[in-house]
Image: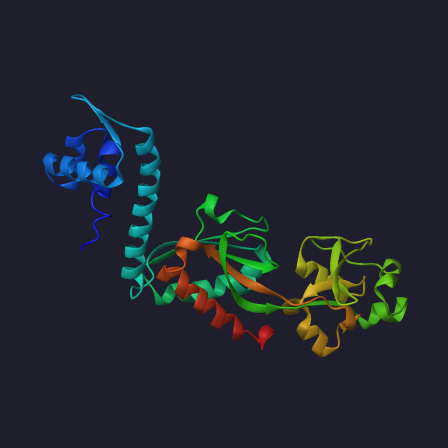
Length: 297
């Protein structure tokens, strides 16, 4: 037996939105009698009236209003499924909007996105570098590059690169003021405050938020790094800022036993974007490109 539960839904939505059988029929490219017949059969299967009909216009019943909302969502999901399937083998094209934190975006993401665009001439990119956490759904963004821990469960997340935090200082600073051997000793040291005066540390196997203070503050990671290299104070920065300086000896890692659990660099995108070739292929390209950077080798 043929399952005909889908029959009449398009006709019903068209009549509900046009408030007229003739206009709905014109939108669908069929006859008014076909529309009327399909809706009558739909009401018969549902055993309820969906529309009030008059010679001048059509109005929804209470049941019709409820059913319309569900039918519109069904149409949206069906159309999205068709677009996703037709896009699977397609090349990235059209506009892709993404956002990232300013410093990380300038140094890591923008160069890779620019190279990616060279592979796909039909693609246009709008990049918003901001240290503000933008609402992707509200702002109409296709992709966000986020650092650290995630909080928005409405988005799909994929890991692009590792991210490890280091607490460190220059040999010059340590020679002057000594080396802290416990978390409690941080209060006796000049801590270089960046965008936050709370540092993540691990104590007794649990992550702990440690409030720090000092006589220097700047919301730029690069500026914090430069101050640490000059011996101004202690800093806590991600690996890509400090690894080369730790290897060269210009900085010394401190309180290694209290290093916080690793976080990550994430690509986040709305659920409905996850099959879009422009988003999917860019995410894959960023993952490979970041892995090839010397900071991550």
